[in-house]
Length: 168
Image (cartoon, rainbow, N blue to C red):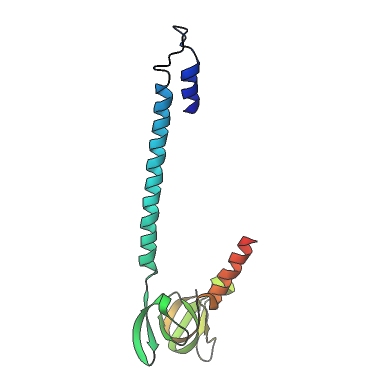
């Protein structure tokens, strides 16, 4: 567009041999304007999509879970779970905290993302009683005592280690 604008103002018209300052700039300016409009519309569209995606993520991240806190069963957002809560877990849940088995029946968890173990792990008082944040309950249900949340959970420590490794 800029090249067309420069050529329109500096190269003579082949039929007349004269530089036409009055009309030579029109083609270059039109190309420059259209590129500007397309860029602006694309940027606006991308910005709008980013806002909608962020709003959708906020709604998706809001997940209520059932906990026993101060002896009372209540529902709280997953981000509000604290150490010491007894968290109710069931089939399909992705654990948002580390914990220890309290009660349940036939609980099996997939912790392959955290441990690299390809087989699902049976959980129970006489089996592996520890739950890792980020694991998924693939069978059964029960309760676990929360022992680590956020950056203090195994998943949080793993994410922090990956961030440090990325920055180096």
